[in-house]
Image 1 (cartoon, rainbow, N blue to C red):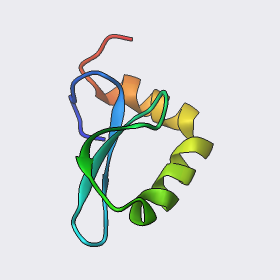
Image 2: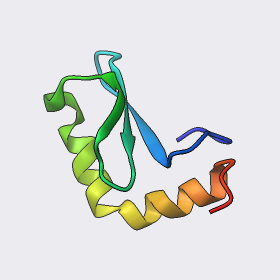
Image 3: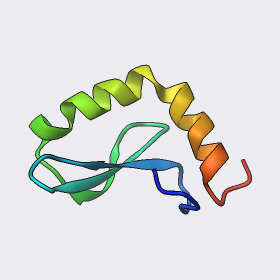
Length: 66
């Protein structure tokens, strides 16, 4: 996540090969960018397990009020 980022609630994944993709917190669907799914699998598994933490961080760091 980036401080002051824009809606919708999302997080960025940058892979070891410098591919970048953006995923929605609510659904974990890819919203933008391209990355080999084999390289994002671990990040998405972490995100699924830690979704409450992602929501809390989004509310803390984003420009969105809710």
